Length: 356
Image 1 (cartoon, rainbow, N blue to C red):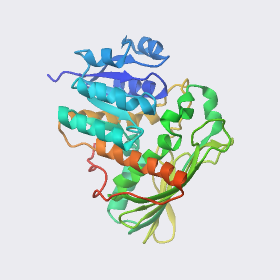
Image 2 (cartoon, rainbow, N blue to C red):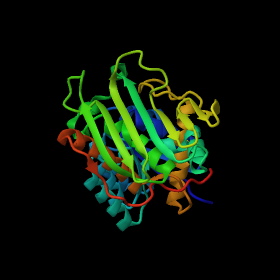
Image 3 (cartoon, rainbow, N blue to C red):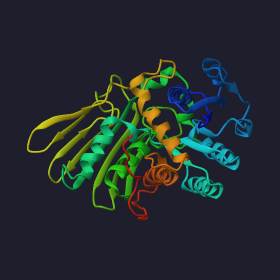
Image 4 (tube, rainbow, N blue to C red):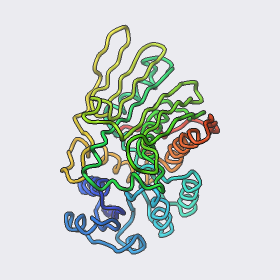
């Protein structure tokens, strides 16, 4: 009989709690221990697991086979390299790291140790996004011409507490938290890479030394153009349906994709709803986690297990994580220098879609 895969978690905030809950819902996985963060003792008590004093203690455990990293962005590389050095598999919450150089270090280390390095692109596992990818790949709306992404978050979300790391210069800015999801989703759907990046990044309202609002314009190697608007400075009550939304114009039709609402298609001059994702809105850390939101994380963990076992998997890979970091750090550099950043063409992006 196959032994359950022992899972450790670094980080004990909202995402640590998310992954802990998801691990407990997936057969074949067993939550073992947690380390890091002021809430780690409470998380350990909640799930009846051990609390380790540091990541080194966590990865030394013989009952830990893989580690999920949910610490602040700039800590990812250290946690991942310690995990990989111990010969354990690792799933890193996006972004993979805060620099392309650190991504490369992680990818090279995982390759050398022959362990799985995955990145937490849970949007690949949401119902509407899977259906949107299928329709795009089948040419339902023709050649993709332009895409508009909005990622708009109310500033009041911060009032729940626990988000101080958003304002830490070591984590670069809010856009590194938001935009990798959009970049990966488009690479995965279109099968192409980002070619050029220009952007304006600002901090308008909050007394922090980092970016909190970015407007970016990107092109892909297949010719498609993307405008991306990311902010966590939006006044209440916000714009309905704009938390994460993609409007895609093709040569033969239109697509309106809300990963947390409806996927709508217009071919032939009329809109129709293709699929609906049950409400799974992002919530403050102390609010109970909704099953609808967790479903994507459970599917992602099954895909992570498949990748570890050498099976076909649509989990985000180390290179997928690197591509997101490369595009976002290019946005910040383009804003700083007032230039257009050109990225190299490394072939088609993303990993194959396998039904699950």
